Amino acid sequence: MDMKSEMSLELNQFDLEQCRNEPLFTLPNPVSKWLISNTLKGKEENNITVVYVMTSILLTTIPLAISLFFLEGKLPDIFISFLGLCYVLFNLFVHARSFILAVHYSTHTPIFNRKWKFLNYISTSILCNFFGMPLWTYYAHHIAMHHCENNMSPHDVSSTMPYQRDSKLEHVKYMFRYMLLIWFELPYHLVQQKRHKVAARCVMGALIFFVSIYYLFGLRPISTLFVFILPTVILSFALMEGNWKQHIFVDPDEPENLYRSSYACINTPTNSLNFNDGYHIEHHKNPGMPWHRLPKYFQSQIANYAEQDGFVFTNIGSGQVGKLVLNGQLEELAKHYLNVGQKVRTQEELVDEFRRRLKPIASTIGKRM
Image (cartoon, rainbow, N blue to C red; front, side, top):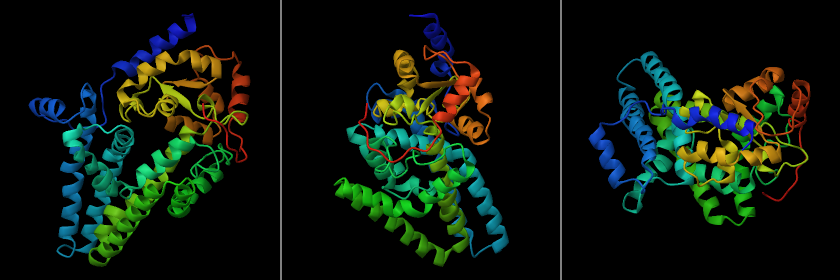
């Protein structure tokens, strides 16, 4: 093993060892041990963190939402609006990121054993509705489309390829397209790919969600606004902003190359908040790999980063990467670049390569790696 690889392994130890910070709180040790032994899949005890996130939401978000609906009409509207605003801020800043990433990984690899598999539906059919993801639509969008197409345009309708990805205007256009058109484009794509059952569930889930919102708005308009409508709008943008930033660098010469259509963020505290989501290349290469194994899997793939000229950033998360790109601070981003054997470049050459991988790419269908 060369010196550069040894250096990267040493730096990466931070992600291997850091404590988990995703849940608001954990459960008593005896309860945790029982859940691990009886409900989780064997040898996957680390997934108790996902259970903690689910439990935190069940014990905070759901009672708060129910209370808001109960109190509307009994207290002045201005006070209900204030409570609704507090609810939204609490849910967005305390739970949203952890829940979305918990659903993300548990959708790829359900965490409960066969006897308790029905518990998977708590997140995918109930809790998701409080975080801008109508029931049954996340699987359709993320698994059946995004991972099957791997950001390749035109079949991945959330692909970042056609956009100038360091442009704030293009960024806004991308998110508004999702907000307005995904409800039509996604089912159409699934039907084209002959995924009729998934398309039907997607449409049915969206209809149930929006009809329910319409009904609830007639009964409790303020509570419905803060519990369902605002989170759906805000988190729809947030979900697409996340996808934009994770696929902000795409090589126009090899857009189908997994190592050139995303990047890795290692050694960053954000990985302890988002189930190691900084290892996005590893996740696309092996979607079924549990989140807690990704840092070690990254280490086994370092030679591929060198060979494929993949981007690795250290001490920075994907949100910060996207922010620096959109603000034109590519020289600052270059300071976080980690060479693990890729082509040797000066800072100026590296920034030029950043710019090359930010250019819009015409729709094409390539072979996956």
